[in-house]
Length: 327
Ligand SMILES: Nc1nc2c(ncn2[C@@H]2O[C@H](COP(=O)(O)OP(=O)(O)O)[C@@H](O)[C@H]2O)c(=O)[nH]1
Ligand SMILES: [Mg+2]
Image 1 (cartoon, rainbow, N blue to C red):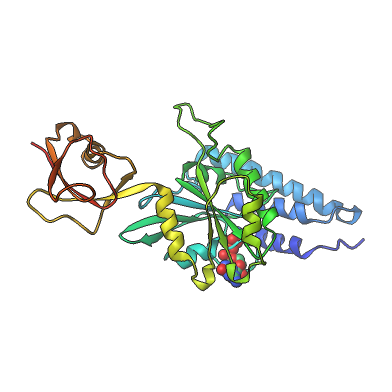
Image 2 (image 1 turned 30 degrees about the vertical axis):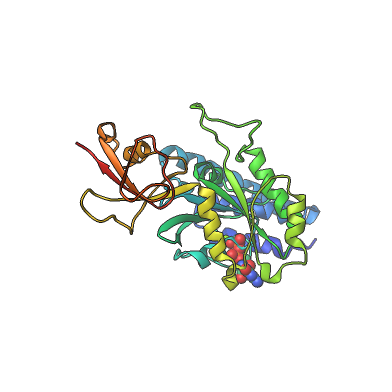
């Protein structure tokens, strides 16, 4: 009996053949199993795929026991880390390609991105880290992928406005909800130290150049969360300025320029600290060991005369210049 293999199956098979890492092979095999037509003629192939899958899963467990390298752990860089989430071909890699210098794979076939790839977005005088990710589907999420989201500052849900937005939103929200990855004020998941596990999230609505009419309005209507929705067309470089500003706002940080006494401030490389931070928080951020001995501070910026002395409990604003005096 002919097997009648579908194009999706053949793509997954191609993926399997080119997969380098064990984890990738497992994902590809799962995708092959999912897309394989299930009938008498394919029983042998099914059995073969299951055998291979258990072989690679076993190898992965053994490897894990022996090493500590985790490709899904992306060390933080810049003023904050934003990690993309989306279904295959939604346009994630194109966003990272358009906004950063990172070398990412943009392709018209699914599963072209297999590991996280970080890049740096320049926003005015700071850098924000943006991480490209492998896709998720209702069936497959790369093992370890949750860890990348767990460690980030913000999750950016990427929705392709030219295809089925209901389906994409559902897959993404199911993923986030089932892993307690979203901030939810009623039932906030926390780790053993009481730190919230949920993350802030927002929606990047991409491919607006070929969007279906009313797609973004429809998306806003069906989404039960109060997300921000930012329309862009990555390939046309449209909306990217607004997107990087939105990323900065959502990170909820301020930039502070440090001024050594008697010298001009360093206006090129600001410190970034959370909104609401005080002079003392800044001192702790800069010199953890010396903060307690902070004698006085002067500020040029919001709500003061130039060079006015401010108390250690004074709340700072974005773009303040601060001079810290230690004995
Ligand atoms: N028209 C249009 N096509 C896009 C845009 N962004 C991505 N694409 C196309 O969508 C496909 C998938 O893009 P890619 O970034 O690889 O998606 P990923 O799988 O989510 O990383 C590619 O064929 C891209 O050329 C866009 O803004 N406008
Ligand atoms: Mg990609």
